[in-house]
Image 1: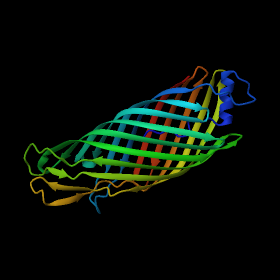
Image 2: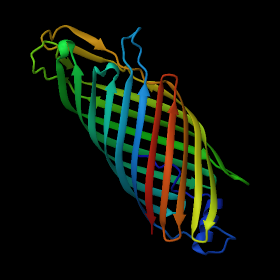
Image 3: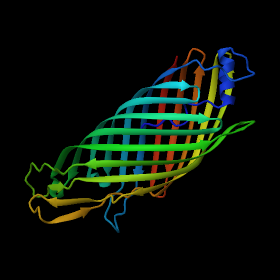
Image 4: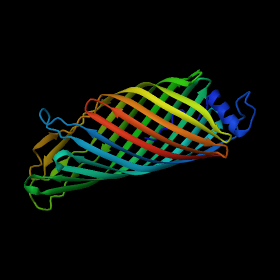
Length: 312
């Protein structure tokens, strides 16, 4: 989901550090001058979720994703912006014991905004995506069953926080809520061998609503006469409400006899941690790198991004 919460509004202490790079007097925050920011990002991540083969018959799942994104912000003033983003990428997932997997290509478009009033900030984003998906399943007697279909995602996020300036940096408690809906159509597996194990899956819409409570940390340092290094960190707790994660399937040879398919269950409670660094130069160029981790009892996710921004 496209999300750049809080990055559009500069607290006064960070603005003063930038002011030194720009050569302005350090006694006050710099006058606002940069109206536009263009940015590009490359990202990737991996997830492993444990199944429950004894109770519900699900298997371990491993997934990987990668892609690029680009967008632009328009700053109404130093403390308010609106922006848009486009993203393209791919996802690949596999079940344990090599019994199946799949992949998808996706294109996503989104809009976002961020506003700061003194130490208070508010950010929101909305995104839609289309996925071109394919699956590959190993049926009994070595038969390969495949399927191709399109799916759609709609999601949004809102976040707000209050930043406290301290001698060592900023401390920002925050709260966020996000929701995402994922729609798949009715689709049928191709059973080229005529084994009779091909399935038809009913179309459905699954949703995930997440609440998030945590804190962000930042510290800006003048590293050269022409650059400022800003370090950010985050620690948070998230709770997810996932709608029924099952699929209703039926054998193509027996279309009236349907049954329920279970997958690895997403975690309900997750610890979130992230760290990133941004190096901004006086010519408007900024480089940043970020690492994110999500840790739950039966699921672990790691992801990273590298970004380039230019403000003018």
